[in-house]
Image (cartoon, rainbow, N blue to C red; front, side, top):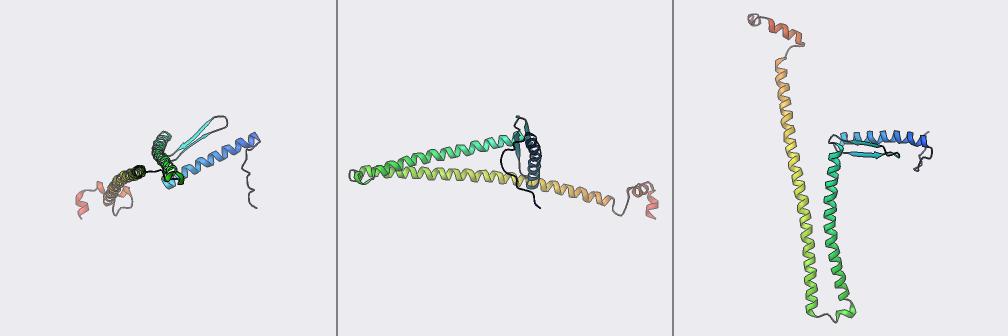
Amino acid sequence: MGRRKVQMKRIEDKSSRQVTFSKRRSGLIKKARELSVLCDVEIALVIFSSRGRLYEFSSADGLTKILERYRCHYEQESEASKDVNESLRSHTELLHIVQSQLEEPNVVKQSVMDLEKLEKQLDMALSETRSRKTQLMMESVMTLQEKEKLLRAENELLEREIAAMEKNEDEGNEVVIGFSNHQHLGNLRQQPTLSLLQ
């Protein structure tokens, strides 16, 4: 018989609520630790109890570093979206102006000069949008290229370390080849050279 489904609502009994909080908090921290190790990701977990007590977990880099990274990422994202929103708002306003001036009653009153002016404004808005889009794409490409360089450097360092470890292991194996225990090797070293040559 399976477990009954827990209703997702506040537990009214104070002691039951405290026990559930303690168990689930431990489970959540355990899952976060497993996820960080298995998937090699940075995780920061912050929990405040109902009494205001702080519980936290962070992967190897530390909570402060992860939170600082989050803050920088959030600021970059909000700055980019702010620029795009401002650009979109100005272009939307321009489109409203164009629509209002090109409505049926007003279209007859528009001169060729007015229409050319509107066309130039639309062309400028379109070129600004394309330019901003290209800039954002280039920034994204440059960020990815920097990440690729860092990963390549890290990979080369790891390959050198592995090669050095393998070389050390090989040299160590050459010294003890053919001997099953170190005591026998010590006894052999003490024998005179002539006895070894016989």
